[in-house]
Image (cartoon, rainbow, N blue to C red; front, side, top):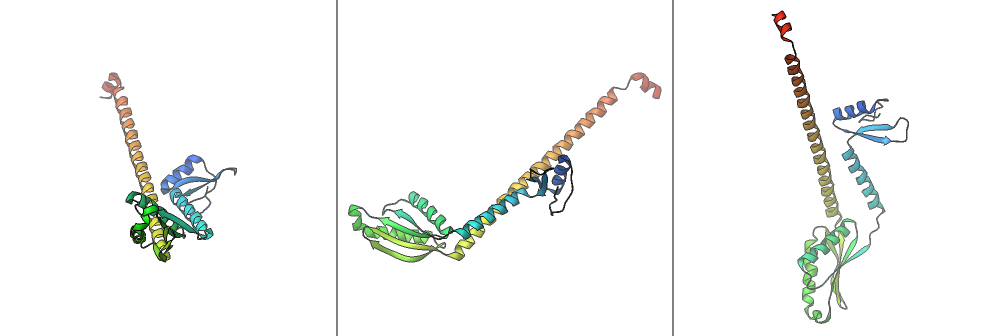
Length: 216
C-alpha cells in the first residue's frame, strides 16, 4: 500500500485500505495488479487522469509538424455551414497548422466575385484573435484563396483556458462525489441510530411484568 505522499504503508486488507482512502477524501487505485500482493495507491484519480491526458497531449504537440489544411466555401455559403467550416479551421489553427480558405466560383458566379471576397473577410474576422493573415485573398482561376496562420500567443491563451475549464470539471465531479459520499454517510448513521432505537424499544417491551413488580 502506497500513501498519497508516496510513503510505504505496508500490507493491509482491502477494507482497511479503502477506509484510509475515504478518510483522506481520495481514491484507492490499483497500480500493480500482477504483484503479489497487488500494489494499491491512495490518490486523486480524477486529477491523475487529467495529468496523464495533459502529458500525452504535450507529447503529441511536440511531435506535430505544421501542415497546410484547406477549408472550402461557396459565395452563397450560409451561416450554418460557415460555422461548421469555422470550427474545423479553429481546430487546425489550435493544432498549429496553416489554413487555406478557398471560395469556389461556378459558372455565372464569377460575375459576383465581390461576394467571395466578403466571405473571406468574414472568415478572417471571425477567426480573430486565433488567426493572422499570411497571404491576403487573391484569385487563382475560378478560386479565390487566402492563407491564415495561428497567432501563437492567442492559441496558447486559448489552450490555457481549455485546460482550466477541464480542471474545473474534474474538481466539480470530485466535489459532487464527496458530497454524495457525505450524504451516504449521514443516511447510514441515521439508519444505524434508528435500528438501535428500535432494538432498545423492543427490549423494553420484552421485560416480563413479574420482574417489573419485583424490582418495585
